[in-house]
Image (cartoon, rainbow, N blue to C red; front, side, top):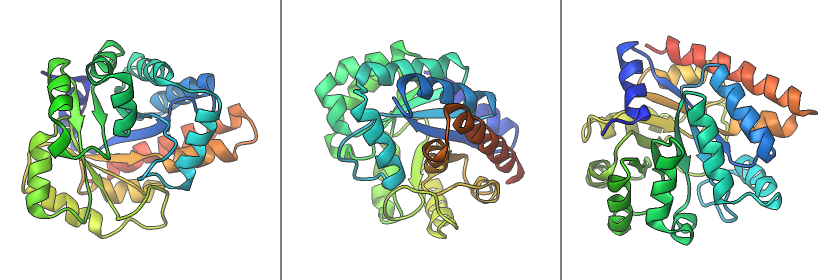
Length: 267
């Protein structure tokens, strides 16, 4: 199988650069606002978009993403809104995936969830809290629907654990650059490049680094050793702080253009 995600990494490899991946929770800042934000990010040069499934008890998310998820949940965002946002992203011509905790997949129905990803043009699903030991049903569903199961590894993961996780992963490996929760940071942890080189020993898959990137300089730095640079909190913060929808869209568009330059300067 070859998804739009696979084709994206083939393209960025040929261009000798990293991919820029943006994260936005479905239904934030509103259902319609989310669709506009996705379009603005795609137009500004983002290569792929992660649609977050807003969740009430997110173990990996920092305060910025939690605040956005709360806004989204209070407005009643549900699974069908997540899939609609995914379709908006894939219709923009960017590779698109969903990031979700396991509970919403189980509630929706494992097979049905995988099918809905395919039906809406998605390439895969990132599951930060699903252990590979409990993944059999999910792996079967992703294989059947030809989407990528994307797992997260952290600096605390042992080398043998990384090997086991990457063996079950496809699309790309999500490298969490620091221990702890998501959020924009002033500097990228040294753990990140070390973690990427440890992952490279176990797999040929592209490796995308998430957690903390918010500037062109940081994007350039991470793009020097990773295949993808994931940015979430920095975009969300701009939308949260904007005085109007149009101001927020302009702000994320400007940042995306800067970051798109950064990922091209890394090599």
